[in-house]
Length: 60
Image (tube, rainbow, N blue to C red; front, top):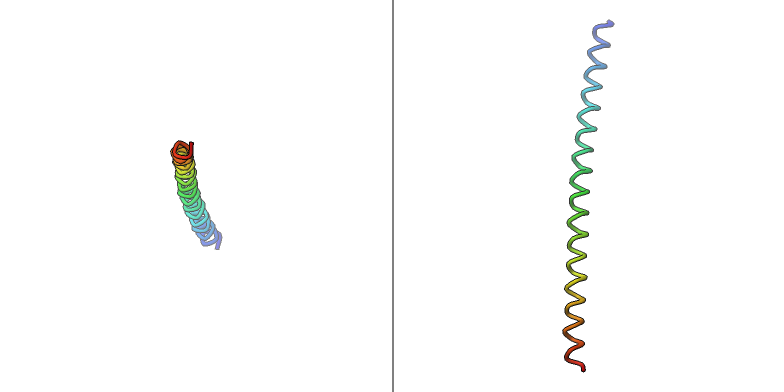
C-alpha cells in the first residue's frame, strides 16, 4: 500500500512538473510576442512621425 501511494505521489509530482514547464514555455512565448508587438509599435510610431514631417514640408 505504501509503495503504491509513493508511486502515485511520484506520478502526480511528475505531472505537476510537466505542467509548470509547459506554463513557463507559454509565458516565454507570450513575452516574446509582447516584445515583438512593442517593437512593431515603436517602428509604426517612427514611420508616422516621418510621414507627418514629409506632409508638413508640402504645406509650407
